[in-house]
Length: 93
Image (cartoon, helix red, strand yellow):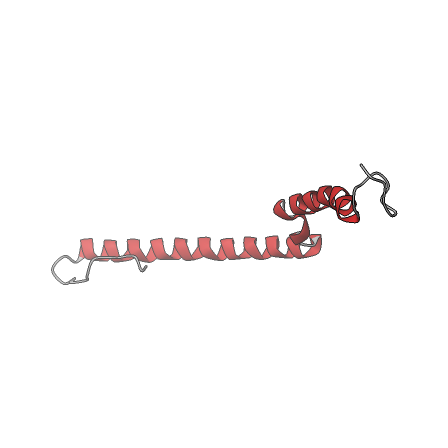
């Protein structure tokens, strides 16, 4: 190997940059793939968790209400067989 310029022991400056830059590039790519650059701040994360819990609670209440009204319709239909011509219950998509 020839000694040239400020990169002693390398044949050219491109080889020196490649040897020094390749591990750095690999480390940055690993951090990027692992999601280290897209981390959410702790305060925002806690706010999102609180909001998620609120939405889950509202969703659970909607499900309970839906079951209640479906059961009420079923009881009414069973009680008044001759007067009820309701269509069958179908879930909205």
